[in-house]
Image 1 (cartoon, rainbow, N blue to C red):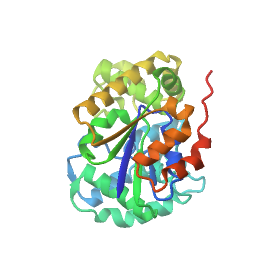
Image 2: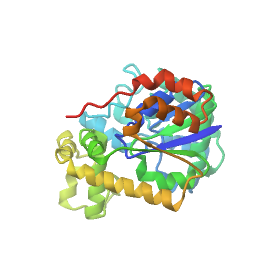
Image 3: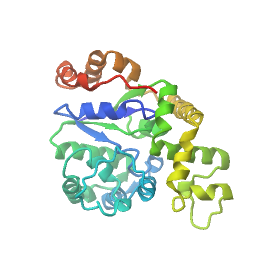
Image 4: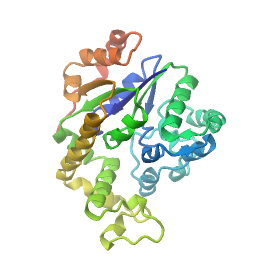
Length: 308
């Protein structure tokens, strides 16, 4: 089974890459799994297949908060007639990924629910690898490429938990990345949390019952958040330049400490300037059956971004 992961700061063209990879007939394009799945920080904790499925079936608190205040990320593709359509704050985190793979994410969710609880006792990283192998199998593919926006935050966990996978490191200049982040609710929320941790040592989304928080942080607690509080973060693009610097430093340090066995670095600017060449090189690195043929079919979908 071919196994690959794309890492980036987010807002760097990674969603586009995932959508193009989905057109390669032998590869399962797994989107937003590692950042939606249970935290890799506990990846070496042992758990049963049943416990793992319960985690995958639980809502992701950050996404639930965005649904509650009415500004969910547009990348979440869930059908209007789906099982959770009327209660999206309860949407299982796994459906964030499945909604990008099929028009019937609930049906695939049920099929996975029959298999995943049978996984053996193993650590979280092993569960993730087995799960994505199963996802590829159930979708008739022989390899997978995982991509989550903002995954530079967890590169050290990825390299520890997935030592043998191919790593694609997608970069983009910070000014354009920051401008795009500042308009995106998920990254507004990430910036708010990173700033709160840096200033107060507290993540508003990880406050335990009975834990006291400074009055300034109370508006950031999940049950008190409003759309205006989240959107306010986007009024200062400089905050997102700092976020880019922070996330990039995390990834660079992790890559230096634990160099992956196979690494391809791509720049978004190069992809836009010469999509056919860059996508062919990507397809070769990912061991696609026909890299140049795939690149030729999808390169026209790479567009030069419109800047304000």
